[in-house]
Length: 443
Image (cartoon, rainbow, N blue to C red; front, side, top):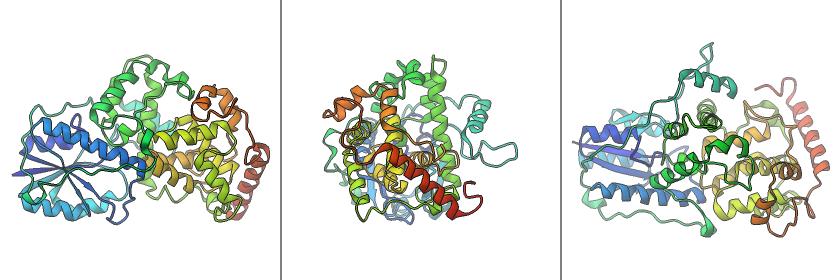
């Protein structure tokens, strides 16, 4: 009997529980479904699709080295998998659990044929609860509860051997997809499990500096593992154990737990990319981007032409490489929402299309955190000053690399004045609270 492995955001063989279970049960047929038509599915953005097709090619190469191949099909996942199972006489479809809100309905369609294994997080979803038995809504106590459990389980290596079932004749000639958005000429990174392993090894050697230097965009102090983690080319617990016991490891492990927390928030709020978690923001009066000056402001932000060197450098790095330094992500997001008064959802959608690591959980949570609308976020009145941020985090070399026309980190012909924009933002928030009524700030 054939065992189907349904790959999703778990494009690896090491520490892949669905692969392990299927390989132990019989000959396997590895499958990836590009599904952008099932109800509720959010189509992938251009930059992350660029990464995906290369990650699929890497997974296919790894499977071919073992005597198999990856079958990639496109359409409604439940329909395609049911049909494939009938065609090959599959006993089961094995998949790792995912937390994006659209998977539940797809999985329900597959019924008892589907066997789910493991989680994309350090701990199983829902395992960490408050003393009252409810879900956490604040990160710090969530972190403490996570630490109290001890280290997550050790990663499990790929099966020593795998047997493969034949691909049905009607699908045997199907090749891997190809895709390159028109702006992808300078995209960086090595998609795939081997690339993830190499990136992790490089980071382990410099993890000691992570806590102190990760906010300095001119330095290579971050892990650069975000896309690898999003596509599951490396597991979160493999990352945890790779740095365990090393100087400075806890600062990065805390970020891995923050990732778990983002997955928990999407379980509690599956509409996090569209609906603010705090009532006050329902009444916020955002800048109209269908008319001027809002339309021009949004275009200037997207193109990195705001007159603020750090903002412009970040937006150009994003466009050219598909990635942006995390500290700069916070600065450019704050600038859009608070300096320009533009709805955070427009920024979230831009990141969704232009980031190779576009991740529903982290992207939505990050934008709500910066805006102040999230369940555990900074206050709205905390408004990043781009120039002060650039000075504090020594970003001149970063600016010179991505926006070389600037000679310093000081604004040049800015589209808005920082002081006036800050006052307008605070007035906008005060108006939203008044419009929402008493208790508007409560989660």
